Each structure stands twice: as C-alpha cells, then as structure tokens.
Image 1 (tube, rainbow, N blue to C red):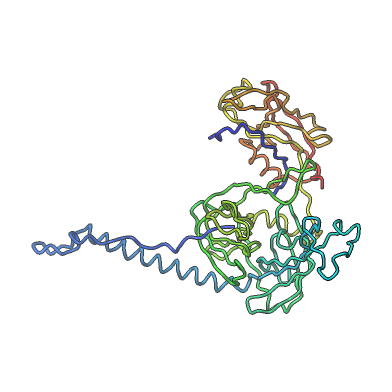
Image 2: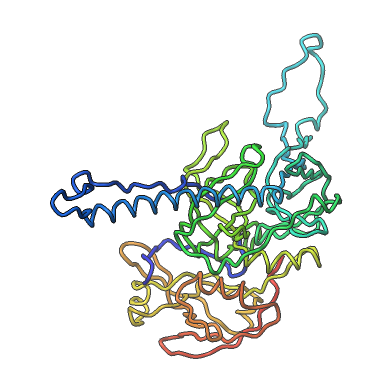
Length: 431
C-alpha cells in the first residue's frame, strides 16, 4: 500500500543515518455471569457457559502470574549485565559576548582587555546513560551520543563497583559505541544477542537502565512498530543526516539515562539498544521525558557494527549518493506512469558519487500537485539486485543491511517510461 503523498521536498541521502515506553502487566477482565453460574436444580448440570467463563477467568489469572514471574526472572537474570555510565565531556562553549559585564564598584575605571569579549570559556558537562556487558573481555555497548566528546567515562556495576572505561570505537551513523573496562571477570556477565528480524508488533518486551539516574530500573511494554527510520549522528557532504534503518518502535518507558541500555524479549535476549524518545517539545528549564513512543536500534545492526568497532575502532558504510523520495500515486500520475507503480524517485545525484559515475539521473522538472510544488522527471529505482524496492526505506535498508563497500549492484530503473538496468559500484560513505 502506498504512502500518503507529501509534496514538500524532503532530501535524504542513502547510507546509514541517525527509547521505548512501558505498559502495565496484563490483567484479567474475565468475569463469571451471576445468572449462569449456578447448578440447575432440576437436572443437576452446571451451565456450560458458566463453566467456560470460570475456566477463562482461571486461565487469565494463571497467565498473569506467569507473566509477572517472567518479568521478575528477567530482571534477576539481566540486571547484573546492565551498567550505569557516567560521563564528563568537553561540554559546550560559553560566548562571553552574550553577557553584560558589571564593573567592579571598588574600581569603576578598570578597563577590560580589548579581546575580553572574544575569549571563550569551555564548561565541562556531566551526563549519564546506560550500557550492557558484551563479552568477558570487558567490552560494553552503549550509544555513541552517551560517550561522544567524553574526557572521562566511569562504569558502575549493579553492586556499585566502579571502573574507568576507555572508548574502543564509535559509530555516529548507527549511534552505537563500544567502551572497555578492566575489571575482575566475575563482574562481567555478557548478554545474549537476539534476532531483531523475528520481532512482531504486539510482542512483550522490557528495558533495564538508569532513567534520571535511578539505577537498575525496569520498564515493560510491547513492540508498537517496526521498520522505522531515525536520523543518526552522521551527515552527508551536504549536511543532511543519514538515517538508521529498521528502527524498533516501542511503548516501553524510556527516559533520559536509559540511552544505551538494552531492550529485551521475554527470553532474556537483547533485541535492541534504547536510543531516542518522541517528545512534544520541551519547556525551558525542564528535561525531556517519555511521551509514549521510543526508538531502539535493532540488535541485527548491533551484530553488524560492534565486531567492526572492536576490531577497527570504526566502520565504513556503503554509499549510493542520491537524494530522493518514495514514488506516490500522484507523482506516478504526473510522470505518466501506472498509478500502481512503486519505487524511489531520484531527486538529485551527488557529484562524483557512485550514482553519478553509473549515470543515474536526477529530477529536472517541476509540477504542481494539489497546490504544492513537486519535483518529477528523474529515474525511478524499482529494484536493487533481486530486491523489489517499494519505497525509500526499502532502498536504505537494503544498502545498509545487504551490501558492502566495493560491491557492484544492479539497479532496475524506469527512465522516460522505459525499464532498464544500471550497474553501480558502491563506495564508502564520505566523512
């Protein structure tokens, strides 16, 4: 099914670009109808519907007990694997020219240096997040934004043991980072990484972390959406943020301090890293807090990124080098294509990119659709290798998850109404 058209141009360069909220434990609402729950005095037979209601009620209560105990066991099993990460970073720079300087009343004629207002003072910032133990070598996974620009990182385990950590590798593109501590291996209880591709909407999940510094906090909820995208910390040469694909949406309660902590399935496997929350804006002087929607980097991106960070300290992503949008019904009609045609309409081809070298063509026409300006006329990508591309997210996800730097892929495109194929050799995304 096609997406509702949006005619305001939105650029998104292909590559890897840059949580969750909780619900209460399920409760039973089954009741036993009072008019059907008695024995018939003439026949001595219990009403069948009453017996069914009693069975349903008991089953619901039993299920609730099992679910509650599952959460308890989950917490006891995983809490020692989750750590509190405290960070001192370089912080922000204070521009003194923004402030009025009041003269010393005892020395009113004192003159300030000519360059006083040009001096900048750096103010260190303290922050905190969460993380979890990856292996017995002391590697710990967290978010890149938790440890970015850190001058000191302290890891605190559930028994209050503290250890200084060093950064092993960071990836702004996936907002993941690996840090390492040197502690007794008995403190290191690695998690099990699950398969995020097997997740389903409605599945029960839980998060353990340190919201607002409240260490060892657990929240529960469900998977409320799959296949989202989230802007990462890496940007294209033109300044557009690359998106992280396959983001998990959850209603598990995530707040500041949960970043970098694990999202867990009920088997105790990590199926994602809690990364961001959706808020309705903030008020000056307040801290953003959970608004019902949270975003989680999936574990299958973690398993792709983390080994490379441990080995190389960084990761390279394949890059196509276009900006574009999902082809909507209205755009297809404006380009004289069948209304049911799906794909990605290429807006712009970045100079010297793999797409430019291969000869992909961007859009060179404008039209008006429902009163909005729309760009049309470029190539429409309908397949990459054998993967059908229905929308922009399909293309982004395939490049990030299924291709590698230096790989040559085959694009099926529609140009001027005709289908043709083009081979493109993907390069590393530029810094």
